[in-house]
Length: 457
Image (tube, rainbow, N blue to C red):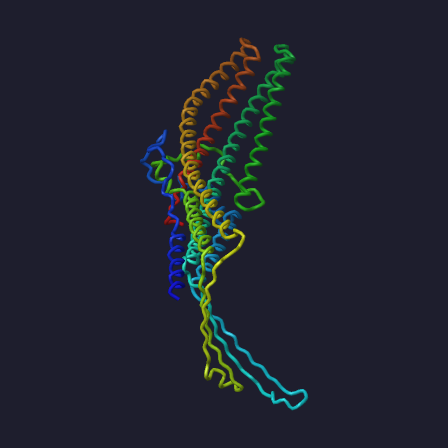
């Protein structure tokens, strides 16, 4: 007995060392102290209702609609409820289950003289519990809780993706509406000039070549207009998908001039670790993997199971619970041979943790890259917008001069056609840059986490 006790306690000590919690690797990729293009800090931290900074009631309505009926958000929310149920199931293993069984029977003679006539009533209450010697059940519960947190953060990531997607699609539609208006203006201008050339041809002051060139210009404008109308229809379809509906939303705002350009503070790179739900999700998945390693290691060790029960019976119903009997038992089970299955399970858990650690580091680096790209885009577009404003002014002046000189016969139609194309292209490019600038602001809001925090989850 002394040798057996010593062996048993040796197993306990060895198992305790084998199932020590795997410490979370606290090392994270080294991030720069500042961004290459630091934004103004006067605006304060990004707010959870960041879309209000664009000053559009229509956009706010669409965002609220998406949050209420997006199928992506609905599915992510359902996954959170599934994880909650799984966590409750895992936590239940820490407590012993108790079951009851009531029975009644009657026996009687069919033939012969056996004295078996009568009724019998019985009641049984039983329980069994596996002692959590190595922390496997606790680790299984911790894994389920970490998975629940991961699914909560995943839902928040989906919500951020949907809201920023709706905002970007809305800006796309509004920008295309403005481009369509410019294309219509350019078409009307080309048609007006076509009427002038037709009258000059009839008067012998213009050639059929000039007439054909201007008709080609009108057709080119019509083609551009048709392409823009196709693009706006596609953008509305994307918005409808994000809203979780089949019909296209009614977007009435006609120009980007009515949209405010928000001022966004980027903060410090290190703050991303607490502002991005996808980083929090990657960390939660890593914690779940740590717990799974403990579960796999505990499965390789002996387990002790206790069972107990209380039973009673009588031939009279009112005396069923009289003089109950109890029973207690224990059993120690240890794996001896399983063809390496349990060891492979441990190796699998360790390899999965290694993968999730790399994913965690990658999530941090990707978050940093997202912000840098958004800041670089904003800085580059701002410089282009300033230059494009001057391009547009000069293009308009050149068109006015070319039209006046053509009317006076001082310039050919080719000069006027080139001025028309330049003016239209300059105006269209200006609108596109403005749209890209606003969409880059949406991208920066998303890269910074959209005002998300642990407390808001």
